[in-house]
Structures are given as structure tokens and as C-alpha cells.
Amino acid sequence: ERAVKAGRIVVLSAGNDGGADPIFPAIFAGSAAARGRAIAVGALDADGNIADFSNRAGSAKAYFLVAPGVQILAPQLDGGAALVSGTSFAAPHVTGAVALLLDAAPFLSAQEVVEIPL
Image (tube, rainbow, N blue to C red; front, side, top):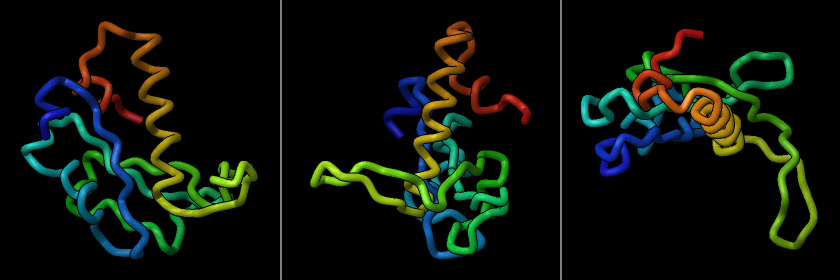
């Protein structure tokens, strides 16, 4: 809540329970306290379908995006890499897109970025 009060965009993983709504903390994206500056993120599979395990938009549908989240190559603590799945691996895609957009259009407010129609 402090981040959105400071004008920042918060990107949150929706959860991996296959539920109808994002879980905490992503459920925050649909709340009035988020001030339109939070995005809940679900996971897509390689075919562009929402992954079976991914929580859906539910009450945060106005602030919900999906991104690749199945079989994502990620670094491991031992220095190697592994294929992993989850909304936690989809959220960085959205975070990166938000960062690129703000770099290209720094005049946009956080709320304007979140509200850009897809």
C-alpha cells in the first residue's frame, strides 16, 4: 500500500491454486487501496492458454494480465538453470514490460500505465 501511495506500480503473482480469484497479495490489485496502480498476473502455457494451475482474474479482472509462466528457464541457486512454472515466473514478464513502457514514455503516470488498453 505504501508503494502505490508513493505513485509506484506493483506487480503481483496471482497464485498457483487454479482458483477463481487471485490470492494474497495479488488480490490487492482489485481493491480500492491499490488506487489503480497494481497488477495481478496469471500464467500462460506455451499455447497461449491460461495454465491449469494459475489463479484467474476474478475480483481483480480490471487489473489482471497474463504472461508466459509454464516451463520458463530460470537460474538456480547452484549456478545452473531449470525449467520452472508458476505465476511467480509470469510476473517478471509484466514487470519488465512496465519498466520498458515507463522508460519509453516517462510522462505517463503509474495509473495511466496500468490502464493502457490491450
